[in-house]
Image (cartoon, rainbow, N blue to C red; front, side, top):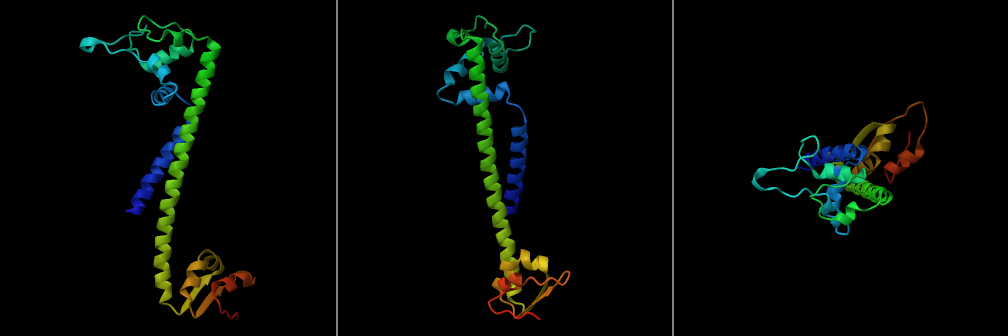
Length: 194
C-alpha cells in the first residue's frame, strides 16, 4: 500500500513540477481570484453572465466569451461590453492593471511552489517509510547470521543495519589496501581487525 502511495505521490510531484515550469495563465489567475477573499471582487468582474435558453455571449470572432478572454481584454486595456457589472474595475488605468496582474501572477506562483513543497514532503515521508520497512527486513535477516561479508561501500551504506545485527564476524573486502578503521569501529562495539 505504501509503495503504491509513494508511486502516486511521485506522479503528483512530477505533475506539480511541470505545472511550476509553465507560465501563469489567465485561467490560473482567475482560479486564484475566485477563492482569494480580498480580490474576489475582481473575479466577479471577469465573469460572463449566464444567458437564458442555452445562449452564449460571443466575442468578436463569434467564439464564446470566456472569463479568460474577458481577463485578457482587461489586461490589454480594452473596454468591456454592455455585460459590464463592475465598471470601476474596468476604469482602472493600465499601470494599475499591470500591477494587479503582476501581484496575482506572483501569488499564483507562490501557491504553486507551496503545493510542490507539500507534495515533496509527502513523497519524502512515504519514501522514508518504505526504506525503513526494507531496512527492518534486512535487519531481521542479518540478526540470524553469525558471519556477514560485504564490501567497504556496503559496510558504509548499511552500517546501521550491520551494527544492529551484532554479528560475531564481519568480513569486509578492502579496495586498494586502504584501511578504513573508522568504518569498522562504527560496525560493532567489540571489533578485531585482521
